Image 1: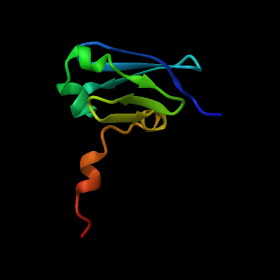
Image 2: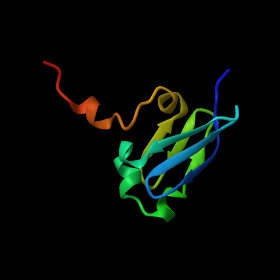
Image 3: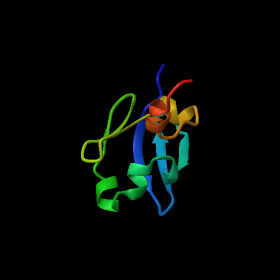
Image 4: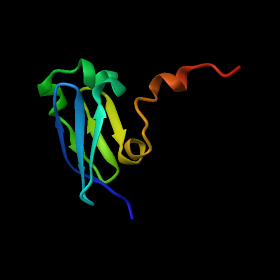
Length: 83
């Protein structure tokens, strides 16, 4: 069974994700630079899917599984060269 987001809200420093199993996850906006730099209006323009949250205008996708695992934005880690 997959847990999905039912609601998302923001305060000055955090994103709060309400899950369908009753849990609420708070993550710092600093984990997601695009959301941190966005206006409150831009942050509010998201779509929920069974697996995550999507912001079309910000080109941001956040998976619920990633949040539950404690992962922030992995974009830069994918760009780091492997020696």
